[in-house]
Structure formats: C-alpha cells, structure tokens
Image (cartoon, rainbow over all chains, first blue to last red; front, top):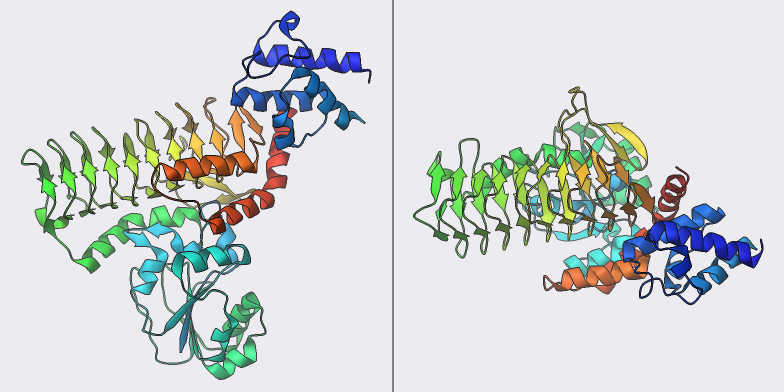
Length: 80
Length: 417
C-alpha cells in the first residue's frame, strides 16, 4: 500500500472518530492537544485503525503514538 | 496433626471474583469463608494450599505456610476453602473423607495414608483420598459458583448473628432514628453513627452494624443485614433484605440480597440486586442491574466463556475487583464483568466482559494496557489508605496474561460488527 493511501485512510478514520474536519488534520497534529482526543477516543481510534486496515496492534505501543504522522508510520509496520 | 485449608480446581468456577484472591477470602454473611472455617478449627498448626500464582500473595496476607510440602509428614486435617461453615462441626472421630455431594468438605488422613497417597500433586492427592479412604456423607454448604454466595447470604447473616450473639446499641443512635421490629435483633458497635430519620427494620432478620459505620438520614435498612467497619450508607438509601457490605464501602440507592466485598462504591441511585461486587469497584451513578427475567425462567450466567444454568430465578451481576462503570450503566440479568474493566453505558449491555476490557459505545476494546491499569489501581487504593502490594501487582500481571487471548477475541469480533 502506498504511503499516500495509508495517510488518507488514517485521516479519514481520525475525522470520523474525533469529528474533526479532514482539512484540519496534518501529519504533525497531536491527537490529544491538537485534535482533542480523550482517553476513551484514543481506544476508539486504535480499534478503528485496526478495522480499517484489518490489522491487530499492540495496544500499549499504539497508545504511545502521539501524532498523525507517527500513526501512519506505526500502522505501516503492521502492513509489511 | 496439621491443618491445610485448600483450594481445589473449582477455584476457576468462582472467577472473576477469585482472580485476585483465594476462594476462602470471598465473603458471605459477616465474614470471609476462611474466618468461618477458622472459627471451628481445632488448635493445630495451620497452612494453606492454593494455585501457584497467588501463593506469595496469600503468604503475605496471612503470614501462614502456603503450599508447604513439609505438612505432608504428619496426620492431616484437610479443609475445603469453599466450605461455607455456618453450621456443622469437624468431627475428629476417625480417618475419613467428609463429603457433600461431589465435594470434599473436610478429610482426616493419617500419616501412613498421607505418605502413601501424596506424591507432590495436590489435585491427585484429593482424588486418591476420596477413592481410598472411607467417605462419610455430611450435608454441608459448599460454594460452587459465585451466585451461591449471594444465595446463601441472608441465611449466613442470620447464623453469624446468632453465633456472635451481640445485641444492643453501643454507638451513636439518634433519638430521631427508629427500629421497626424486635429491638433485640439489632447490634450497633461503638463508634458507629446513625443519623436522624434512619429506619432499621428487623421484621425479617437482624441488623448488625460495625464500628465507624455512618448511616445518613432517611436511609432504610432491612434485616438481615451486615454493615462492615467504616462503611457509609448514603442519604435516602433503600437497603432491602439480605445484604452484606464489607469494610469501607459507600452504598446508596437501592440494594437487595447482595454482597459488596470491601472498598467498593455505589455512591448514587440505581438498583443492584442478587449480586456480588468485588473489591475497589466503582459503580457510576444510576448503574442498575436486572436480577429477574421477564419470562421468569432460570438465569444463565457465562462462566469461563460457557453458559451455566444457575437454577435460580433471581441472579444479578458478578463484578470483578477494580472494575468501574459509567453513569447510567444497565447490566443484563446474570452479568459477569471481569477484573479491572471499564464499562460505559450503551443500552442493555451484553452479559459478559473479559477482564481488563473497556466497553465503549457498544464495542469491546482491549483497554489501555497493564501499566495504566496498575497505575490507576494504585491511585484508587491510595485514596483509601491502601497500598498495592508487590505480590498483588504480580498477581494482576499474571491475570492480565491469562485473560489476554479472551480479551483480544472479544475485541476482534466486536471490531467486525
């Protein structure tokens, strides 16, 4: 899967789960500080990424990911 | 002779309540199963035999030998830790295995047979003594499932009250509070405080109140009821018959025939009935459980992933230690929630929650991980001046591993729906 496609799908999921406009989501956006994710939403994001990419992530490591760009990198590991 | 109070393989029938503690620490009536057994034991050296992963924790809590094979060099009195010893005694008359149905209640085994039948495997030893030593049927109550504890609780409270035989008011009982029924069926320990407009109703059984208990105005307490040390009953609470609240609980709303182990909060309105609430549980405002099906059929409960017919019409919820619910949580009839779950409202909920899972917007999730769970437990316990022991932490980590696959499976299935 191309990086661009992964990024677009990650943005789509974030927008759906957090209710944030896609245009406001940037690679450097931080989930908590910039996009307003609460702890419950962080869990929902992990589940939604797993569903979108049909992968299973290690939860504690996934919850350590702080930005959109890092999330793309993190998900890429599971797609290899 | 030496005494071993033991757990057998049926400890897993009592999960999730038994995940972080031995079966004999579970409560019924005024006290734990151990305290009841201990009150009728003869005066010999005592020890325990428990599953491996809680061995160090039980040693720490009780300061008695645990899984010590040197005990097997003597005559033995073996006592099943699931025995609800509210009646009957231990008769040391002969070598025998006292059984109740399929369960050993206690056994007296002479040294020669101990040597012959024990090869290091305790479960095998139990099977061998049952096969090789005279079985005597002694009808006793043995706890096989979590619902047995709540089912026998009203009777256990009455028996414990008779046995202790303490009556009268030593604490602060407002002259504007009332007792309905026999005043002789009330005991209020010194240091307890009963506010004005509280009603204690002993029509159906006794009410026993320990020290430092505080019962706020307009609460109504029906007997049989036991209220443990430093527990608070919130204003206007409707405490129906058959409840036991262990130490340091906060209880409000309506509660019926339930056991709160200790250190648990149901501060607000909402109904809990025919349930066992573990330790350090927090039930959010308006958390309610159903305890009766609308078709009046027996309640089925999921144990270790399998449905079990309880044979009972009224069964509520079994909530593992450190689990929390959100405001407005509605538990279905016969729900089991594991330890350290975080459950949020989503209409009538499913009947089973694997330990450590988070249930959010109607979906199972794997949770924030073990480190966060332990960090939260330390904060919660610290608020009540309790410290998470290293041995307890080790047990929690072990249960996290043991329940990992089940949790992932539920999350996986949930993701795809």
